[in-house]
Length: 88
Image (tube, rainbow, N blue to C red; front, side, top):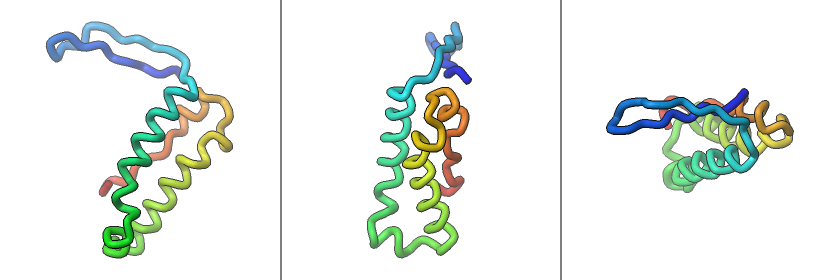
């Protein structure tokens, strides 16, 4: 799948661009979303999560780490980006 990027001017969508996904694009997304979860991995926060949320968080982070191995093609990887837990 190709990545779609929307171009806005004054909050109005004026153009849609599409381009093939690259590992650079995916890496940028991956780094940002893993950093977003880093705070939850601190023991004082992690220990206060329910067991279900702890399991979801660990699985989500592992899915991001496994993405390059599971989907060597960047477009396939982009199509299978892990779904963020709703509570995050």
